[in-house]
Length: 198
Image (tube, rainbow, N blue to C red; front, side, top):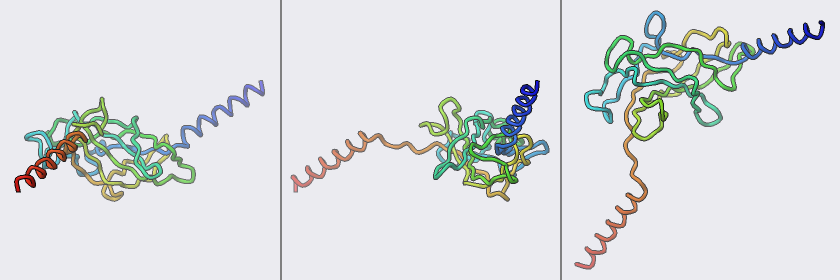
C-alpha cells in the first residue's frame, strides 16, 4: 500500500514538472478583443499574384513560429495556424487566433526565459514555407519571455517586443546551374566569333 502511494505521488510530481516546466507562448496576433499587434500580414507590392499587392492575407495562408536554436531559427511544426478571413477582406484577415505553443528547450523555472522568435507566413501548408513557388514571408527577430505551460502570458506579439507586421511574396526564381553554364558557353562562343571577325 505504501509503495503504491509513493509511486502515485512521484507520478503526480513528474506530471506536474512536465506540465509546468516547459516554456510556452501564446502565438497569434488577434485576441478576443481584436488585433493584438495592430499590424496585419499583407502581400508585398511586387512578386505577388495580380491584384493582390498590399492586400491582407486570408485563410489560404498559414503562420508558423520559429525559435532561435544555436545560430539558426528552427520551425515548430505544432505551431502552424491558418490565418483568418479572406485575402483583402479586412477585419480579421491578416491575423491568426492565438494558441499555446511550447518552445523547445525552454523552461519557466525562476520566472521564465527570454527566447528569440520569428514568424513565417506561407500559402502552401502541404510542402512548407520554403518550397519553390510558395508565397512566403518572415518577420524580423523579436524576443518574448515565455510563460508556464498551464498559463502563458498574454500574447506579446506587439511592437514592444520588437514584433512588427511583415509582407509575403514569391521568391524570385533562381536559375538552374545548367542554365547558367549554357549561358556562359553561349557568351564565350559569341566573344570567340567576334574576335575571329575582327
